[in-house]
Amino acid sequence: MNIHEYQAKELFHKAGIPAPRGHVASTVNEAVEIAKKLNSPITVVKAQIHAGGRGKGGGVKVAKNLDEVKLYAGNILGMQLVTHQTGPEGKKVYKLLVEEGSNIEKELYLSLILDRECSMVSFIASTEGGMDIEEVSAKTPQKIGTVAVDPVLGFMPFHGRKLANILGLKDPELRKQITDIGAKLYKLFLQYDCSLVEINPLIITKEKNLMALDGKLNFDDNAMFRQPSIMDYRDLHEETEGEIEASKHELAYISLDGEIGCMVNGAGLAMSTLDIIKMAGGSPANFLDVGGGADKEKVSAAFKIILSDPKVKAIMVNIFGGIMKCDVIADGIIAAAREMKLQVPLVVRLEGTNVEKGKEMLSKSGLAITPADDLRDAAEKAVKAAKNVK
Ligand code: GDP
Ligand code: MN
Image 1 (cartoon, rainbow, N blue to C red):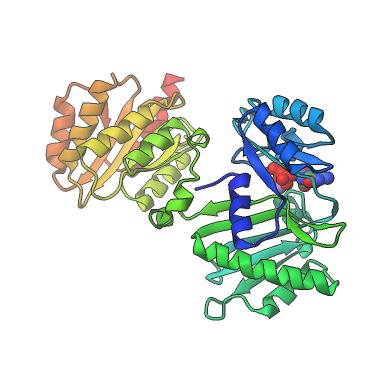
Image 2 (image 1 turned 135 degrees about the vertical axis):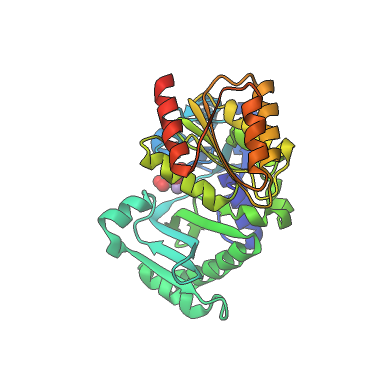
């Protein structure tokens, strides 16, 4: 799960991590009122969408007076903001962060991730802040340093000194500040079950202070049941209808950009289904894991989500009935296909418990279903069917 920058900064403030004062606005009037209260010589108006690169896309503006705040707020609110992370269709801006401007001396990069190679939460730091870190990593990897934190030790002062060295901080005051920020970020990462904390840029101000000018937080979805305060930050505008529907039915669903809708049980099987569709020359429209113990309702809901996706030219169902029974799956498919008046070709591969019964139900249903013998056969049939539709 992702949250907005203004929410990330709320968490930073709570944790004692320095960030500009500011407030969220949904209207131009609110934006102007906030700017008045901030009473700062410079005010920054920032589009709140779940994507980076807003600065380059025109979603971050520095205003010198209230008239400019009004102008920029009016321009940005409601715009379809396109950045390198949104795709060409962009994202609509519903909210703004209005905050006091900062005097930037230098922009740095600091983030925290879970490094799966060493199984430790690790800092990534670079003197090249404010830009695309992927680009820095590709062109000048020597400018990026990492500091892994052993969970037995937790964050120690020497981690802070390492970060200071990577970031080229010589001033003792700034070295003290980065150690303090590092300790607080590490604590925040663990406290909220984050999968990413990114500050780009972390700035050195002209007044010689470190400050988080931007904030991006990602969370481990599997831990959200114990993070109600983070769940309150959820913004449904940022999710597709399919994703919202899927979360209601506890389905693991991720929309992709291909043309073959997939319904699979088990994450591993779902991954291999996507792979084999690619190998057969097609492209999956989604990842969808209905889970091991799905019932008729869940299967039906999953099927409807796939069918509501206009990209889908064919559907491939790949189910292994272990805990789940094939006849239950068949029942769900038939119910949903009838209700949604199935128009696209449907290829079904069933295997496992009650498979004969399941297959019989499908063939007697009167629906145009193409049965498949195995995984490869199903993928090839689905790819062929999708090509014929086009
Ligand atoms: P992103 O483009 O979505 O990553 O948005 P950021 O919050 O990182 O802002 C983009 C850029 O806007 C920053 O790298 C800064 O150069 C600039 N910017 C943001 N806030 C301020 C500010 O208070 N003062 C000045 N002068 N520039 C700012
Ligand atoms: Mn940024």
